[in-house]
Amino acid sequence: MLVGELIELLRRYPEDLRVVVNGYENGYDDLTPGRISTEKISLETGKHEWEGRHGEPPYPKEESPDGAEIVEALVLRRTSN
Image (cartoon, rainbow, N blue to C red; front, side):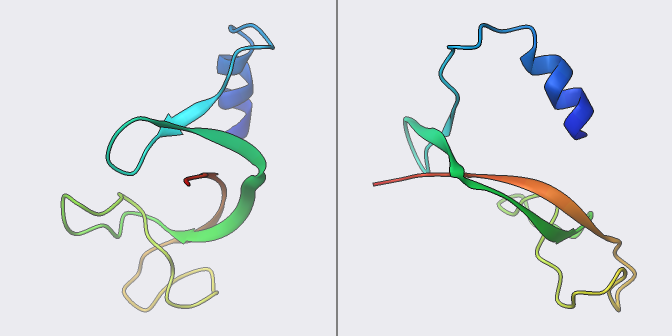
C-alpha cells in the first residue's frame, strides 16, 4: 500500500475514529504519532510463516547481496505496556 492509497482509504472514516493495531498476542494497542517513522526495508525476504513478508535489510544500500530490493517505507509501530 502506498501513502496516497492509505490517505484515500482513511478519508472514508470519521476523523475522530480511534486507530489501533493488533496486540502482540491478544487485544489491541493504540497507534501513536511517535511510533510512526520511515525506515529501509528489504522486500519479499520473509522465508517462514511466522515472519513478515518483508524484512530488515542487512545493508543500507538499494539492493542486498541476495538480490532483494531495499526501499524506504512508512512503518507504524504499536505501543504496548
